Amino acid sequence: MANFDIKTFDGLFDAVLKLKNVEDCRRFFEDVCTIKELQDISQRLEVARLLKEGNNYQEVCKQTGASTATICRVNKCILYGRGGYDIVLDKNAEENNNGQV
Image 1 (cartoon, rainbow, N blue to C red):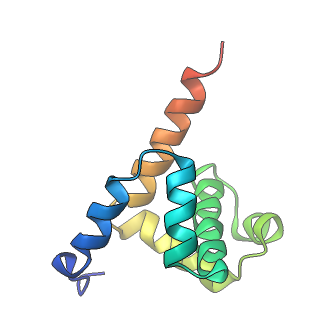
Image 2 (cartoon, helix red, strand yellow):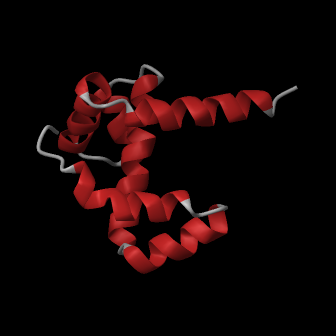
Image 3 (cartoon, rainbow, N blue to C red):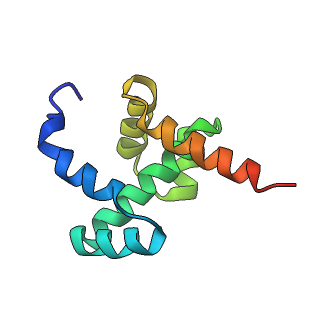
C-alpha cells in the first residue's frame, strides 16, 4: 500500500467526512459507486469483522461468499495495513457494547 498517494484522494475523504448520517452516506455512495462496488466494499468489511473474531478462511468464505483471494487481501490489510479496518471495527464494537444493558 506504499504507493497509495494520499493527496490524490483527500477531496473524496473530505467529502465523506461531511456526511452526517446513514441516509446521507447512502445517497452519496449510490451516486459515486456502482452497486457492485458497494457490495464489494461491504463484503470486505464483513470479511474483516469475521477474521478479527477469529474465524478461519473457510468459515469466512461460507458466511460471506468472498473468494479466498479477497479474504487473503483483507487479512493482509488487517495484519500489515494502516489500521483502517481496526478503526472502523473497534468503533462499531464500542457502539454496540455501549448500546447493551
